[in-house]
Image (cartoon, rainbow, N blue to C red; front, side):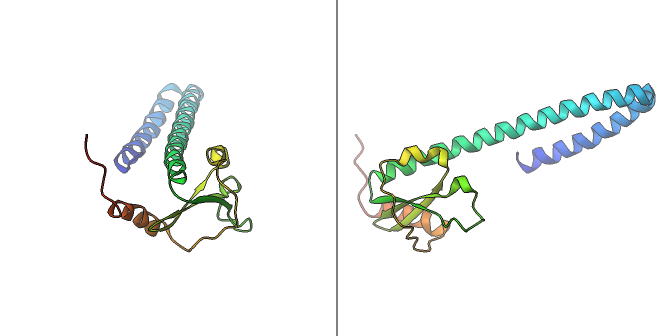
Length: 154
């Protein structure tokens, strides 16, 4: 959800609360409370559905990224390693790391346990991270395009 949508949703929520209050006064406290409860329940269900859709969208983006990473592992030397198990900054199901040694330097991506099967062709080795950060990783990836001539257009 982008910022304008979020602001609009917040304004809508404020207006809805005000409207619920006015309806509660007009209907009497019991009927008004009942209506307010029904509206809150519907809103909660809508919020839950939105969270589920957001998670599904994010999961699909990771699946697409991992397919591209998998393709790279078949073009360049690559291996799997485990993230330091004592590092609590990573969730336990994101501890696998795919390392790829490009001609421009090492790149790596954490993968979710559920995507591990895409990388069964890789050997599991000791973690040998060269210290690159995300920005450096993508600089190395982009630098590949300068190493060879692009294929001719057919």
